[in-house]
Image (cartoon, rainbow, N blue to C red):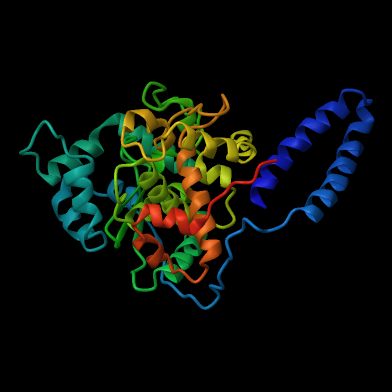
Length: 368
């Protein structure tokens, strides 16, 4: 149903533009209301839920979750007493503090740099202090995010009951990372990569427009969910395009399960128009993968745009977005799970025979 909603929104906007061009100003609001009401009735009556992932009952899933503000804690340190302050902070961040100092901010050109020296240099850099101040202005209060992530990790606990609820910390890294995991016990969120697509600090040569479009606060749970999903899998079972898109499709399926309220377009990093185009051209995309013999190719250069971040991947329609192959992988995984709904998330990620998985899924996109 969600793909229908994406296309429905496109239809409403286009239809209203046509109507509005011939109406007097005082009639536009009224006609928009009528158009929305009438088309909503038709759309919702005729649209089924066949693509929806069944949402589990997590009312009894209890977790102990608190979002930790690591960046606030390190900037609150007394730089004249940095070593004892770090030792005290280590009790609160036993994994994050060493990782941050030794990996994220460590000067790679100076192997002898100590964690204290790395943190001292980081805190003393004016540009980093400016980024920190900006982050605090935008994200001084993150109660809303803690609430959203609590719900996300309740779903995570439902699907992976044997795994711990990780410590989740916010940070700034001078644009080094948006979200990451370190095993099952730690997740990090780089708030400085969510300051809005027009933030002047983002170099367009490093962060092109299709990436900056996702540098907004509503994408924080999405980017973290993707990092968690990547941590939950062992990597593709082979080097063929089929192996890669099924692996990535499983990760996207988990993201879908962790964030059931988030639109498909956001989870893919697409605009609504791009998402609608994917659904409208699904059969043609699949046919092209088969006819071009890409599905079983191991030549990564031939299909790189289909599985890696890219502004486009024009294999059927000119506006086809990058990573559309991963989206096809998600569609195959959904087809499989619809046929075998009792498959657990752990079992899904353990299904490594790509050809057998494809055959059992019986994926066949509908043509208009």
